[in-house]
Amino acid sequence: MSQANERLRRYLENDLGACRNEDVQERLDELEDLETTLDPTLIAQDVQTLSSLGNETRYRLVRLLVEADAELCVCEITPLVDVSDSAVSHALSNLTESGLVTKRKEGRWRKYRATRRAQALLTVLDGAR
Image (cartoon, rainbow, N blue to C red; front, top):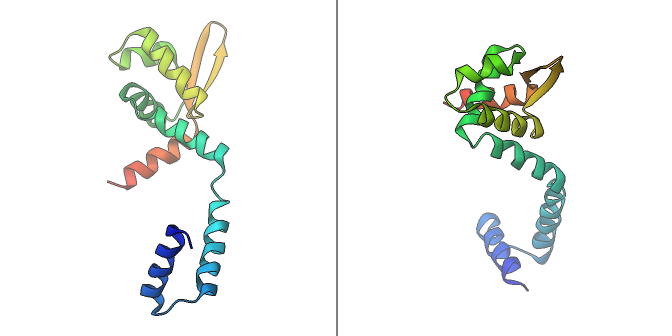
């Protein structure tokens, strides 16, 4: 029996008071079913999204757009954050790629809006305080 299975057996014995081979196999089957819920594509998308919020400039931009609850032109956003125009542009591009912000071009102006995903994430963060 592998070391992991032996540890599981000891855990089940502790939890159940006794453990049979069938108990171990049943739990292994349950855990295998649980593992199938870990879709690698979904996990990669979630990690990208959360990584986007791990930078202060990007987080401030998302927070700003969520609070605005409206579309803002990049010319309205830039004066509100204390970074260069290129840093704002790069941050907004990253946020768009990660699905936290949508971008729309109107003539020569670019307008941004927070997505529902961004709103939901900030709502969770706010509720956890």
